[in-house]
Length: 98
Image 1 (cartoon, rainbow, N blue to C red):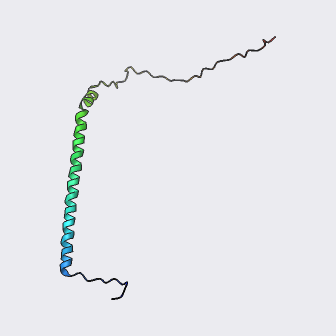
Image 2 (tube, helix red, strand yellow; image 1 turned 135 degrees about the vertical axis):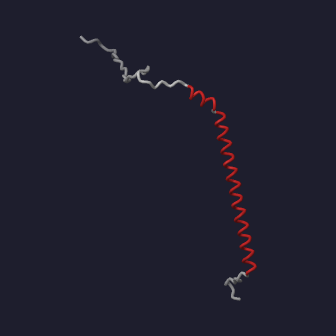
Image 3 (cartoon, rainbow, N blue to C red; image 1 turned 90 degrees about the vertical axis):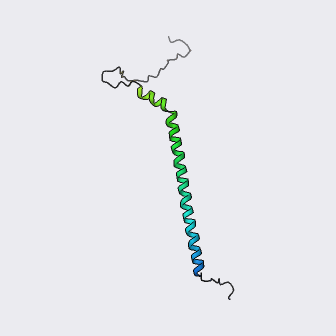
């Protein structure tokens, strides 16, 4: 055998079958795990959604029952606002003009 050159053995049919079986098992376990995680996330999301619906039910009821007056001719006050800067005239103390 030469030094530095790697020596590879050809995999036999039993090794190939073992690799195929182990790979298939790992693939199936990965899929099962991902489905379990997905179901768990969906369950937690639904629980949070239901909790928020439950906690905001009175607020939603109050918004639904609040009177909204969008009829024309209602009490709508329109106008404009103008900002006016107040300036003060200052008188310098000094000799009075003649």
